[in-house]
Length: 261
Length: 266
Image (cartoon, rainbow over all chains, first blue to last red; front, side, top):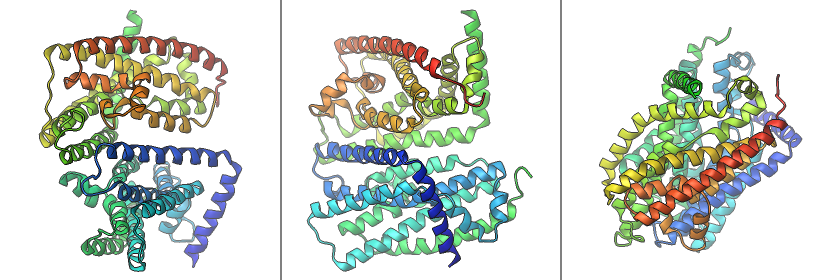
């Protein structure tokens, strides 16, 4: 249970740290509100000209936005900021200090930077999903709810492992912070169901950057249009990618020789 | 004047050398550039197809033209000064720039031009590929091509001046991120998610009152042939007027801000 204790300690430090800067709460609230408003306005705008977008209704798109916030909030809570810090540390040579600690290095570097206020995005996501469900007028039966939770967890695992693999490249290429920028840009595309994009972009958003599995697939489970093959694919990826990222991390560690030492 | 020219040439050379150093970063930036127009292009073409290929006078193929040109115009007018200025003030890098005998804004203009000149070489072929994929149609009269040049230059100058002025908020506050996010939310009225013609009242009036459409939508509409000669004349005048106002604001904010600036880390 070391890993759980480690996460809890980092969480506690982060919360204590954030409580020093309480205005940050206001700022985060404001930023999330702006992001939510932008999403809602663009949906309203598109649906003022049509009543369905490639088979998706307005309330179904609302569900997509909800999942977008939920998954975005969950990954930005600690995995993305921690990996951002990791890449910076490789460049500056500060990673050595993390490696000499007597815990698993991969666990340590993925949990040590927590952005506690991202909880707001998670809450917004849950609320938006709730509103979308009410609007669709469908009650979620237990099986559907379970499938949703499974693909949601799978999506978060897939995205996290994927970013982990990207970040590990820092061991060889040193300057890769911009990779996270690419990821953010591609993630933006997930505000809309990726099935509406042309095939080449759909392919890129499924296999190059797994935004489809992270957002569109859980949203499809919510609105009850999920293909069982996608469900199987998501679960399979959620098993394979973490294993691969582990192996890749070990390779990277072997290649690392310290930057400034 | 000739000193300023020398400074610009030197600055251009330096920035070009810098950009060549970080070629990977340019590619990444370009990817970000392409994604957004493709998203909205797809959405609006889908909408057009499901409503008889006509959304307020736009067909799927004219949407393609709009968003591909918008990508290029956005690339030409884009600046990242609102994100950079804060660290200049916070880490005190501005102090070194102030020691130079010319206004720091000249450095940003030269750097921006160098970056755009270089990246346009990649952005143009990308626009070509998108054109092959989405088959855009334009109805541009020949006079509009001529007017497009000053319209684009004015749009670049206007957006640069406005964003440089807003960036100076960093002199007064440390939470510029919130201001920047709000700015980019309001920037919707520039027409980057849809042509302004598609807006309904009161959004349409708001878009007409705000300066943002003159930074993006106007040159784009000119290039794809949706602007009459009179409208073009009004547009150029509006751009010039907004630019004059923005320059006055920039000077006023700069002279006040610089008095507040007490170098950090000096």
